[in-house]
Amino acid sequence: MRPAKTDQSAQRLLLCGYYGEHNLGDDALLEVLLAQLPAGCLGTVTAHDGALVRERFGVDTVARRSLPLVLKALRHCDALVLGGGSLLQDSTSFKSLLYYAALIGAARLQAKPVLLWGQGLGPLQRRRSRMLVSCLLRLATAVSWRDPESAALARSLGRDGPVGSDPVWGLPPQQWRGRGGPLVLCFRPTRQLQGSAWRPYLAALDQLAASHDREVIWLPFHANQDRGLLEQLRREQLLPPGLAARSREVLAERPQEAMAICSGAGLVVAMRLHGLILAALSGAPCAALSYDPKVAAAAANLGCSCQNLDMAPGPGLLASWDRALDIPPPSSRLLELRQQSEVHQQVFAWLAPLAGL
Image 1: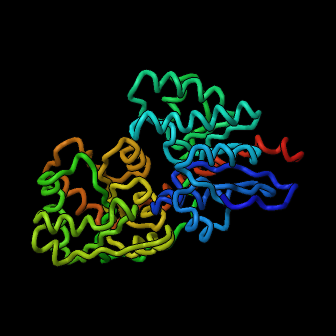
Image 2: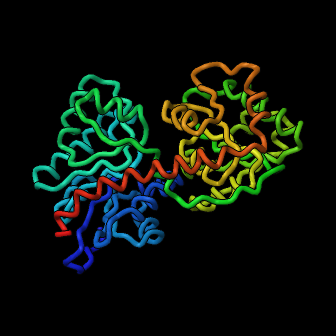
Image 3: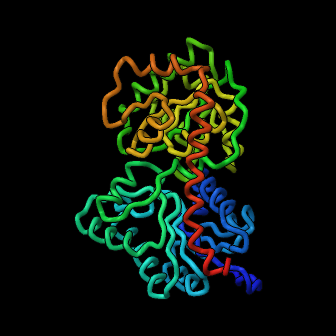
């Protein structure tokens, strides 16, 4: 961890999330979170690649995967902020849930506020997970939820709170310029698409690209998980020859670079939640492939087509993509979603008494 800044009047907040993981969605969350911090607040960010986060955001960092170091950093902070994403869940592992439980418990023992900012909640697959999270929610000083499903789950566990759209909707939008542009794919590996399960989706893309003569750009959102997926599918001989000839992978290092690529697209087909949101913020026509309920919820919120990957695709898949091509989402709906994201800033009102404001 870098040494704390010497400004004794500033409040220091420990900002916890999946930061520094080379994931454009998490980078976008951190960008919005830092922009929403009240004046006089400084963030110490839990990060895997701390050097990257320090360089890009100009903040202090602590090694996210070292609980002892994070707990040490907490002792030098005035509040704990769980910043975006779905941190209280057990689909990653129950151990992950215990990590955040330790932080929340330590903060409350030190009489420090715990703020859950723009959080998704769940899935909570174990009974012990639901019992633990019910206790943790009662310890939180202030909460805001990124979707109605998370808010409903929290309410069933005994904690109400305001609901907004995902915080990433708070990023500045870009102008769409993609009529006649390429198909952009924000795909990721997932349990539902193994081997031949890819074929119907790739066949539909092949037909769509061929019938409208479009290039196909594969845009990885997670450098460690998504990068190389195009080449993997080539090696496994799952790509139709025409789609293979039209396809190339394009890398983006920052959310704004990904948005710039999407702003030139005739259609973005996204499996990544924040791939879908950033594409919509760029004004691009969108369609979703849902590997997780959070993606389906975001697609419903946006009003774009969505195929559940737990269900076999029917003949309507290609038709839905064809209808969406070159038809951007309504600007009025995008404005609504951006305005709804502003609700998350309310959680920081709890810091005002500490600062004497």
